[in-house]
Image 1 (spheres, each protein chain N blue to C red):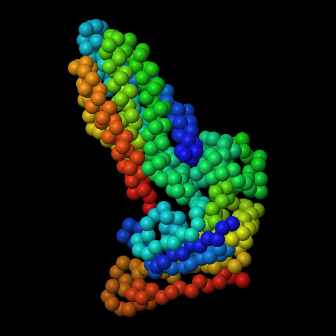
Image 2 (image 1 turned 135 degrees about the vertical axis):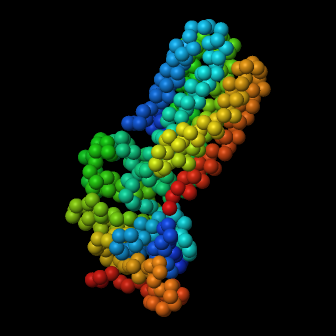
Image 3 (image 1 turned 135 degrees about the horizontal axis):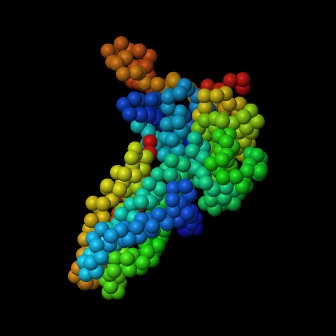
Length: 218
Length: 224
């Protein structure tokens, strides 16, 4: 157990500070940039912005989650860390599960905070913002699970980062449909389904990611 | 240190469509050392990874009695961290045992980020990480790469101490490695026939070995 905490502490340090590869600030700035650009693109029509703003925040969050993909798994694989963990009996599944948690902690809370100024930029009202925040809270764990799994699958491939981005998008479609869809209906059922999709993805991620790391060896 | 053992039973290794070696067997007990020799590309590193359990053997099995520590070309230390903190990460996982950093000449480098270390210094740091693991079986893949004469002597002394205390050392190196009582295994003697050769039923030496791999006695190291 203490080993897992040691891994989590290291993962958080790597992902939040980020070393030379850019830390947790980058996705947040990207998210805010999209929210800022959107009113410029569609014009200052308040009703249109208010009706579509929530969906834009969702798309921005999804795309922002792709940014840290190339530093989730690849650097540690190159350093030989996964080999050393395997020799110590720390399974790939445990490492991946810890990494999903660290990845979520490093990008989801900052993104949910950034959604507050983001909501002001696209001019959505209070109840819609509440639905967006709840949706992000339920949907981002799934995004984190997809991100780590895809990063494990594409680690070591030439152009893995670009390929990873393309792979994340179709996998994230269910989260987007239920998460952003709950904005249109205003209902709890969309949020519940978004959370359910997240749970399924979280359950799959450690095993899919672990298998990918092992298959990449040798 | 606890009693340990490491045995390879009739291992074959395939990389792509090439069979690198086949019919390789040995058994090592506590205190034994083995040098894997052979030209570049004969499968020394692959065999080390098979022995570590990181790569499946194409055929055969490995029996490990004891934890395994691996030293290869990856130092497994975070490049942007100061050496002291990078080593401390592994000490948190492996326990706070002495990793002999002072003996490895790392005392003055603890504040230096790992990415600024030279090749030889990185190798010494990786040795400290491996020693701190306190595993009875050491697998060393080209441990002398990048080390100066003093470093080479130090690694030879460290492996000798490890074997004296009951550990097992397997050293994959094409360079001479001085260690008392070390056996030597040349991977070239387990090589499989190149594609096309021997397929005509000519009965080459390779074919006979392939058909019935004889037990390979381990010749003693030179000068012992």
